[in-house]
Length: 281
Image: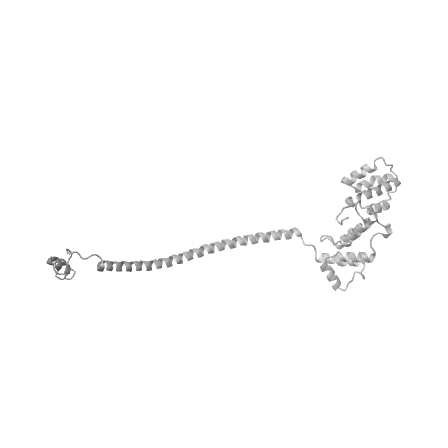
């Protein structure tokens, strides 16, 4: 398809060349062969140069060679396919409606040179179709405002529509995508920093919580430890008492526990049954 972004070097703007040919009075074959390569570049220029070598520079020869060259360039294109393509066109954001309409009409002018094209006077769209296609190519929000203003493309002229939508373009210019990308990148970086800071705070909080928690647990454990020590001591005392009361007997050589102020030993005390048994023995 012949895209709206294609340059005249890619599609060879034959209509514009023919208009210049008439207005600048390029009426000789020599002049036509001289200026036509200025509209070409790269592969196209090489193809044209090879094609026209050894050709007489007459007007008739130029027209014949130009027709052959157009067929070569437009091979694979079709008039009806191009019409379908143009019906689906939408205005690129950076183009004003007037700029878009100029490119649209340039494509329409080139239709006559496509394979299967009808006679030039029958090529292209009707005025009503042009207004409808131009309207459909505008952004949805602009079309909504256009209808709310009580306007209809079937009633307005194309010039009226261009003026209205040019005002829309001025009031609602295209957004700078690079700035949006930069903003998105900055927002992403800020979010990442916040997340890192949040994790850092969280880590610090966790560390603090762990520290406080451990401290409390340690304190509780210490308190429990004190309780345990108390129990241990109590148990120890009980054990001591148990050892004193139920452990090994008092030795006969020990001071008498019954008469602590006397001068006799436990082995000598009459209250000691074992002593009496021993004495009796």
